[in-house]
Image (cartoon, rainbow, N blue to C red; front, side, top):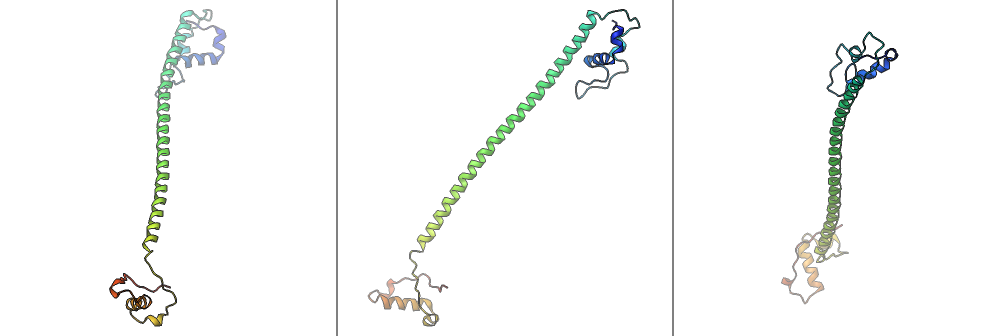
Length: 173
């Protein structure tokens, strides 16, 4: 098989033949080996410049093209599958993130409700508290509980002494 002289003069065509056939300097995938010392142009160009490009030669070039295209399609399919897997992973991660955010909001609402309940219960537990204002520190003497008990008996004289139960007495302010 011979390439006409007009084709020999154009180096880009012989480079194209080398790339198409997978020989020469072109590499078709990540694991491709460097080109061998002989190129496709060496094997298809003869010294006789009068022979035209034959059908067999073109079929071999197209066969090489088909092989390269099939290989590229396989590589592309693998890459698309990997990309699809990554997109699926990101979608799943996004769904998990949204679920966690909803859960955080629910827990924050629950925390707010519980804090309100605790505050309410603390306020209700203080309902039995009695605050006495205006009693001077000197008037109470040393024993607050005894002096407070006497004050209540003085105010409510009809109550029996054992009816008044004082859990705790302390000074405030």
